[in-house]
Length: 507
Image (cartoon, rainbow, N blue to C red):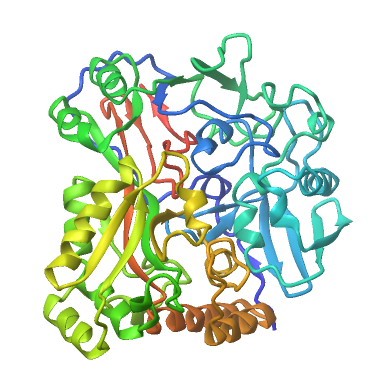
């Protein structure tokens, strides 16, 4: 029997906020903050306020004040309520129950018809979010508060997709508006003040008078400033020109010395993935014991300390403890042990213990730290520099037999589709994995969440047993704020540009 994801017992404010607990604490920074007004500095500009065009991820710091999503995620990546208070996923459908009485900032009702309009529009857009709806054959309005997505094939990752731009809800009358990219109309706690905003410089938000949950609408004004220079952002925070900012890891100690409160937010997961598993380019990689030797020789803790200033966590698998897809048995499967790595290398019988990886500027220090670990046990990992902006392209081609890469996957289905399926874009040598395929198929056919989670655990175990990749660490994005004035800053998983501002107060 399919387990109903009933989440009505959570308060509406908790549904809107993605939190691990308040990060704010006492600090010594001088306060120039104006009560009720939050000034924020971030690294990048918003690409578009149209969720059919916006890629999501870190860009959500700009979208979240204006838009609600159907679902949200907690700090471990588990799905929690958004506008949908409950959902039920089967191989045939995804059924959503919606919160009653919500409206968009233009007064339109946020009901099942509005949700259908958004899904149909997003699916037809051919933008970054459209792929999430590839298997959605039809959308049925069951009642004003119930929507059913009919699936042409099982779609285990669909709920998690609805926590990002695929699940963003735009007022139906604005969906086809030519200026949606600069004039968003949503149901979130704030609206964009286009007159006060300036593209590439700052974006100003004021309260949405149609939003009723005042526990989440706690600010009179939000201003997000685009400051691309790391030192400039840190200086603006220390001087009180801004109240909260994304901080470069190299600037953390200086910020702390000024009394700035520092919060860390889960960022990207990093892995060393072996793509040439048949040994076409690097014969050594065909040998499982050689791959296991590589994984065992890497001191991920050391890499985090030396290249991320300690802002990361060594983690042998993609999903952290507390996430429903975490597999306890895999926690220490390739714990750092140079003696064991040497034994495995000797047992492998490999005579040419070498392979190569691509890198560019920011990734080169990570690759070099791993290169040193491997050299210590007799393995030669060569590093070839590629042009900035071409690493993803190289990862999808057969020029290199292995890649060291950050990934953003938040669901095992994404791991399979991108990296494990024979036709996956990150499986350039088109290697088949029968045991992985069998476990994946079991996940697709599972009729309840427990069965699905168990099957994905089998899939991840098969990956680890065969050492298809070495899990390394999850890095951390860093945010600083003046804790004498700013309160209620909370952890938002997967938002490297900063936290949600829902429930944050200034004063």
